[in-house]
Amino acid sequence: MAGRRATSGVTRAGSGAPQRAGSSARAGSTAPQRAVAGPAPRIDVRKTYKLYIGGAFPRTESGRSYLISAADGTPIANACRGSRKDVREAVRAARKAFPGWADRTAMNRGQVLYRVAELMEGRRDQFVAEVVQAEGLRPDRARIVVDRAIDRWVWYAGWADKIAQVLGSSNPVAGSYFNFTIPEPTGVVGIVAPETSSLLGLVSRVAPALVTGNAVVVLTSETRPLPAITLTEVLATSDVPGGVVNVITGLKKELAPVLAGHVDVDAIDVWGVEDAARRDIELLATDNVKRIAHRPPGVREDRFDWLDDRATERPEWIAAYLEMKT
Image (cartoon, rainbow, N blue to C red; front, top):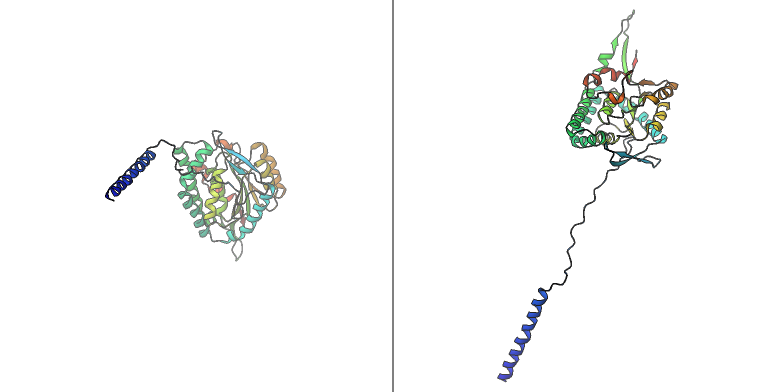
């Protein structure tokens, strides 16, 4: 019995040893191991550039788009190619928003426009990057342009409660009554934005129209619209009521004649219209007796210095969108 137990013990011990050896062999095996999958590379969320009409961001009803390239020719985005119907919808939204905006106190309008400048300051780096892309400027030069655009909002906002004192008057009359001349907003203003200055030129034409209570429909720079679309995101989150500013991207040769000929547009700014087409646009505007604002004679749009404060910060630019009521 003792021998059997001893033998049995040896057998169990011996049978266990090969198992451990086999286990070690498997651990040291060179067989291919299954790799642990790492995190998948992240796909950037690309921005969709839309229109801005009535405080909302619709796509164009036509479903069309066109390619936008950087200053060096690199494709960077597709923008909506606005249609005639988009222009009509924008004018309708502006007309609806105009009475409420015009009825606000001058001080309140100034505060609202100052708020736009505050929000632009918070997105300054984004505007700088987009101006670099659009206009091919160096980053330090683009910062100057963006800073000047923000400052220009502030400059025109400050005129909200002062322009009436400068342009208005108390007129002498031969009688026991008073006679006053008071500036009033024109109404709905169509603005064909400058082509080469994608942000600063746009702000310099839009702010003077807004400060006195007009509502605007803007055709952006055709080749450089992206900073303008980013500006609409600022407007949408500021205190500017929906419909007061409406922005459409697309081809000016298609959209500018529609805007100029629309009978519910009271004034049009043709600064961004090419010289070859400007006369036709002005003739369309005069058919329904629009007020027309344009570049001074002999001034080329691509040579104008938008950084020149003396040329761009002028009460006369506000007066271009006013009617004088006596």
